[in-house]
Image (tube, rainbow, N blue to C red; front, side, top):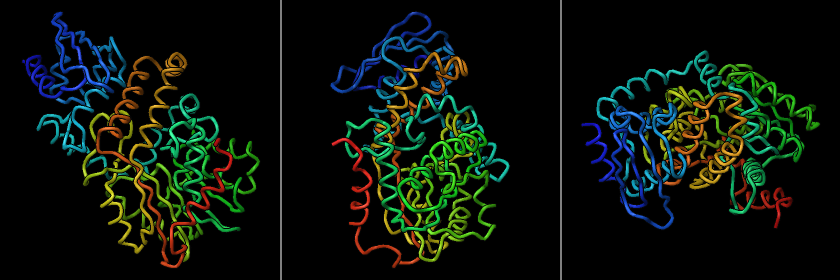
Length: 418
């Protein structure tokens, strides 16, 4: 029965690009037709339970079958398989590939609601689940120059990953409209790349806060090695506790952290930011976002990648900021920039396959590459994008037009190749 249901599902879904499926009983079927720009992929199931698992929950079932070596990709790779499937049901045209059964959706919503409490203890544990798996993995995957684990910025497609990440830092720095002597708070500072960049290019002091002990240790090392220890401090702090200290900052920046806050904490986050931002201050929030309305986090991401996390819709993000009268002074949607970034990370993981397996194991490698492939497809064909939202407490805190952003960015990007 499961085989029949999966056959019907793939027949109705895969129209462009060819997908070959070899079932455990030796039956081989082909779905779709060759299409320019889409890959041909062949997969094989090693047991009769794989079709059932996929039909019950296409995303989690396929992911776990792949992780366990029960779904083998024999032609192409996991990136090509996920790309082929998602491209046949693009979000822009109303597609919703991978929707689990009704029962599974109800269970997922209930589990998602429970996890969204995201208190201080749970928040630190959730961060550790993803970021404290060891810095060595991230060294292999990320750009060496800045170690940025967030969407790069691609003003040109021919940039290297390191150049695109530097372009992102310049893009954000220009939006901060920094002044000499400014104090800057970096919420979720990662391995210190943003803090180091700002300290090197501007006469500012930067305080970075993180909940990851692995990131804390390496960030402090990198700050010292960059020679900016007199201008940058990195602390192990929760933003909620940090806001109680009474410190105020001229600028606040947060890149790739808001996705971990959890929906019930949105208003708490912005209240903390408003408390810490000077009256004439400027804040820049860079986050993964949903192009449509609010939703839930899929079971695979919740279970294996970002427990407690939630990708926000623009509507609920801005609504939460309005409660504390933060003015959204500029909003930019980065539509495909993260897809370019993720493909670079995926390529580097394949390049360092043996090293990653040695650090973890084969199952981890398959889980990680499935995560990167699924994320790429979500930005290329699904409903994900990145938002950069600039906030101010005063309507007079910034110039009247956006020209200052391009001017500041142009000055900072002079080191990029022509």
